[in-house]
Image 1 (cartoon, rainbow, N blue to C red):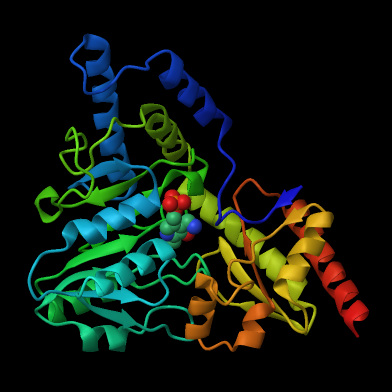
Image 2: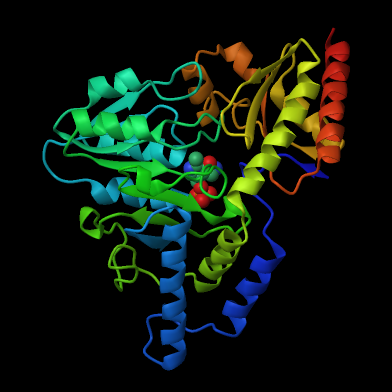
Length: 372
Ligand code: PMP
């Protein structure tokens, strides 16, 4: 099988499974208990927090461990909400774990602004300038789009925030960026940054929220006060330690170069067919591709029979978030339906990519012939 849906999830590293097993069956102690075995586990978690902050390229702040990005996004948004006449700003390109929280805030009577997208998939920075003011409490904008692979300019967003919304906090959903795109968080004035382990070869159901200043956040889950009083519940120690293994074993720069090479090769094969439209994304990990005259979902199913797995996040249903994103970069409904999403990982080989590219073109043309 050639798996090209790595933005949905990745295969766990073998080493993560070993670490998971070790902390599940050997060092299985509750980090909040007072026995010396538990204290050792608690110390291990503290070290992981520091290592993640350092991998993010920061020296300040900490990590709150969560059950994944959906929870981290909910915590950042709902946890920074304050009573009174505050306003909240999101982009229309956000993942449902941000977008639907924004909708909930709106239902609760808060003032919400949605900033649109440019044709290149990045947010519309001018619109951002226009909606910000001194009452803005939170800006939540993703780093890399899971739909298009567009990379938002964090530096510019921070500059705009400083100028137009001096009292605001900035949350960034970094799920498709962390451990993939080289960056140093210390270069940006980001208050909260979301990560999810299963997008970088760690386990599912574990992630974190980077928090620059814990006083800017309130808990949304009440209980025993674990996680610096910001997220109660016994920590998923095996999951966190396995996530740490993945983080330690990823060479971001090396992988970035390799995946770029894969993407270039793949694009050049697909571009040989004039009926294929490639959305030029900035992240090498994600490619959104339109196949004129063919439904993306039909293509995805036909490719499955050839053992090639691709994503259709954007294509299948009008209810899906993908439509919202592609619509906002200027595609019409018919065009959107023709799209599939290809997402790479650094373990793929050039041979696999060449093979997949050729099969995709073949299957596409077979479907077109049948239709016509
Ligand atoms: N944000 C983005 C940008 C994502 O791509 C995803 C996963 N599709 C999520 C959030 C949700 O991640 P999780 O599965 O860890 O809840």
